[in-house]
Image (cartoon, rainbow, N blue to C red; front, side):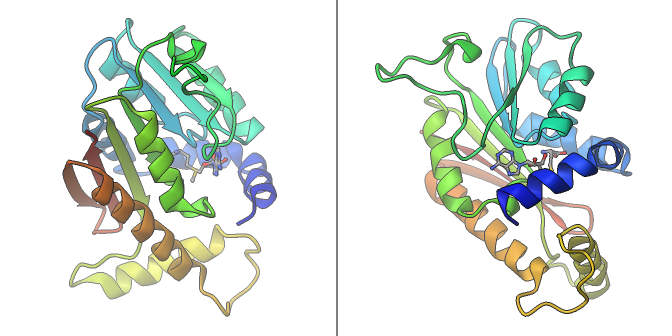
Length: 234
Ligand SMILES: C[S@@+](CC[C@H](N)C(=O)[O-])C[C@H]1O[C@@H](n2cnc3c(N)ncnc32)[C@H](O)[C@@H]1O
């Protein structure tokens, strides 16, 4: 998926995506679990890459409390507008337009953290259902690992083919969902199946996080389709 087609797709379907992102059965528990895996303390700073309509932001805000800072980054304007509207009441939740592979947050030439992070170290980076859309998912994970401070955490959650014993019917449904949600949605046969490309990208991203981290927690959810990896950095 190119940058333009991703922005066009999520921009056009922002309202529907928002509904799915918040109301899919089981999704609230998964988002709460992903926020918990970030190992945040009150007052911490957390950045969500590809925050979409902001469905994770309330869970992150709850973890860092009123003294902490939550930053959501996404490059699709209509989804960001929904995220901004949903978090308008919290002045410590910032929603920024930018590319998750070159996040508009980080250290300046002197190593100081910029204004959005209020000069604080970034304690955690979260990315849910995003790395499968990146050209170089492992490279992005490397950059996110570099962005968090000492003892920081990077958490990835992604949908990929199940590896459970009951996987075949689950994976058939998963393939249909991926094909329908990958532009163009009209093709029935692909030379390079989108759900297999997605799996490769997700494997590469989670593997890189495991390599970089000094401690790793791996979990699966929703019949093994959602993989969550949390890595603590040095
Ligand atoms: C499947 S949605 C997931 C949104 C959110 N993380 C969630 O869990 O609901 C993927 C989001 O990633 C964003 N995205 C994809 N690639 C991006 C990039 N390189 N930089 C910023 N946002 C990106 C898209 O605009 C879209 O909002």
